[in-house]
Image (tube, rainbow, N blue to C red):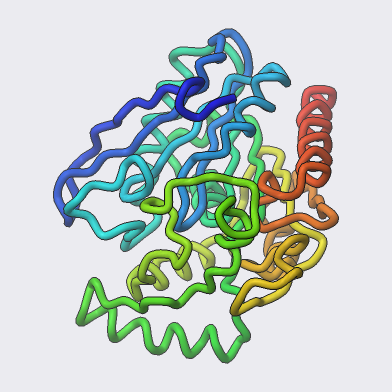
Length: 311
């Protein structure tokens, strides 16, 4: 599928916030039919929806496919806004709820929620606290951001520093806090095979705001009391590594998050939990080498079929 030809985009007007006008964007496959199951995809941090092949796979497996560019991300980023900024991830619940209601009203089948990285953190919190969580049949998480990839000392230090700075300076930030190695590993102009908008997903990332760090930590801590009722699939790479610059490791490992954090925190999200390790997977498993992502798709759709068989 072609991202420009085979998808349509709809701007969703949201309530103004502390920065003014706010919008989100609903992206829909033009091959949706409206009379079958649907999946809603939520992207990660410094990200937006560009994985056209993801929608193609879901359409081929008898799902309608939707994705959302959250406020201040990708297609939804407005000139007056700070990119990817939030004070609380519950801010995103408004557009997620609107989108779920719209899908529910326009289709006949069950709705599934799929979140990648920070999108997985947001989706997991939504399935605990979101207004329309009861309309979701199952939750799929692709390398969810359930903890910072830092040592205990580094995490404590980050929070100690972030709290006073964010209190006095709401837009206090760190530039260059994230390694460019991951973006370089997936973009076609560097070491990858994918093309994406470098204004919306820069190789060197956007500044990391201290307020955002606190919002993420609060969301992660809330999941310690998680009680998601629907079936959950947590997918992650079979190995991970921290890299400050690109190396061969970036071709077959998660170099953004620590898979041990995903496993240890993921098992507590709900009672109907399935954990799936993908050999040689990247942080975004669907952007892995072709044979790896095909295996990911196969196992994910097998799990989705198993849910129907259990009913």
